[in-house]
Length: 265
Image 1 (cartoon, rainbow, N blue to C red):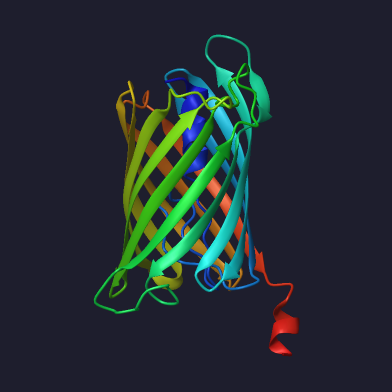
Image 2: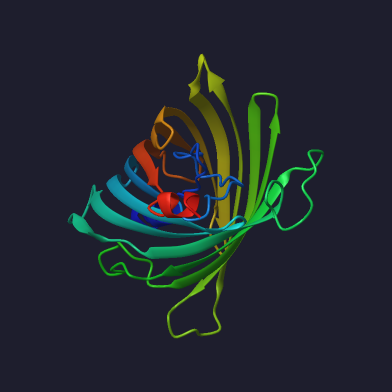
């Protein structure tokens, strides 16, 4: 798998999900939280990655909006710079991902909320091939996906698990779909102070005719204010990842332009 392809797959899993206190950039594992109604969250991130084939830089932008108590929607964009050890450098926009998340079980979920059960959600997604396949900044394929999200908090420790299925083919919708599966587990907990959290995760994926990749990511999340959060982390490729090392930094901030209108009602 090329370095550009790996970067694009990584971008797919950069989820942005917010509540009044944000969750869990820089981790790939999705959480079960839903943005409040009318609440926008903006995420800016940068990932510098080095592997056996060269160096890549991915700058990401994500916008999330809370539609209902149990539904949010999101769009993810990326700008890629590829610096292979052999061949010329490339620069351009990556593919675009549009997704939603539905809270099925848990607080404000569709089904009954019981503290004995974990929170559960579903996240369908569509990837549009807006990047340039010839340059390596795009996949050249449409991809449909569904991700199952499970989350449970034990005392101060929050745990999450994901299982996802993705199917892609070229925009002509021929019959040769490529299957890809994603899985992830993650925990985080406060570190010294409530505003600072430490987390770690394992994520993996395997696809039709390709190897099974495994990554480990450890990161910090620092909540500056109720609506501004800084994050950073380091991800290591443990298996079939070309000795990949990725440094991640980002900022998330949110606002509700309708808050004054809603509170006056």
